[in-house]
Length: 113
Image (cartoon, rainbow, N blue to C red):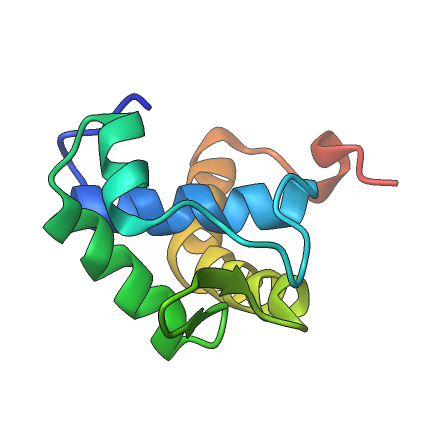
């Protein structure tokens, strides 16, 4: 996994897991790697992965079966979609709108079907 120095690693891990849920790589109800195994796979401290898992758990995206591991929650895909849409509208879209206005571009250039 390539990390961006402008964003905390635990948030990048969070985003990566969310993207894998949306892509279908992680299906609802499926088990994901343990904190230790995931940390080893991507080359980060397990404490960093644990922060990501804690946030994913608090957001209802994953859950822990004590002694068994972490699993993707039922309804996780919808939860992730809602959170990512809100984040896009709140944090990315205003910048895109400003840039389009500065460049004199209207919505027709988006070619959205």
